[in-house]
Image 1 (cartoon, one colour):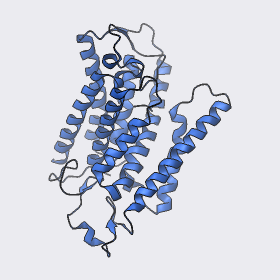
Image 2: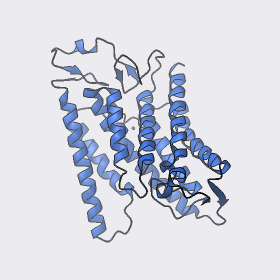
Image 3: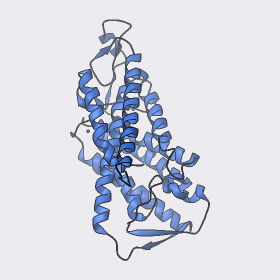
Length: 317
């Protein structure tokens, strides 16, 4: 995937697939929450105490935010290339993305916590998020080796400084992507569309925005769509984008260390190299890497199941 409200303690709700409306901050909205508003034409925004005159307001704001964010990003990339920057990292765009989010939130008179931007986190969930990502990538490596999809060999002289730099770049990029998709957009859309529809739309956008990456195919689309659902589950249950940021960053970084391309992007330095025995892109992922392979889809689906079960167990304690 190429690159901040405490956990609730109420064990009686299930954000995904439940019959009652869910608060993305990890709380359950009572079935009669709408009665808190004075008019039947108003609705209580999910995750807030604010009433909106028109449900379509948040949808329109979300669309405007999306346009401003990505048209501005395209302009910045164009300018950077004009001035001679050979390689434009996604991390260069993050300050602009965060600035746009800041302006929108302040213009609405809202609190950043309402959009998942909180550092008040549960340490076990944070550790789990990072560990799960690493574990899934290593599982994919083991399965791929056992199935003889590729042969793994360790790099004799790896570049420590470059690997540290890669982690910083990936962490910043992950923060930016999560702030946009699982932060502002997901929370804003949920005010009018509900959490399940919002997750679907955000996941669709997230996957399609990788379409220009080298090697993107239908398998890549499915894997990224599932990955976005997984990341959304983390923020819905946890209430903070800290968790998806950690998962996103460690998922990408683990791929770098093991020698996989990351969403179609090659990294010069790694700890391992992969020599492929099979040329079928559906099996290997081709230029897109693990995320473009059947194996990537399988481990991501497994991660989604584990993440949801772990989240339920954490909340039940």
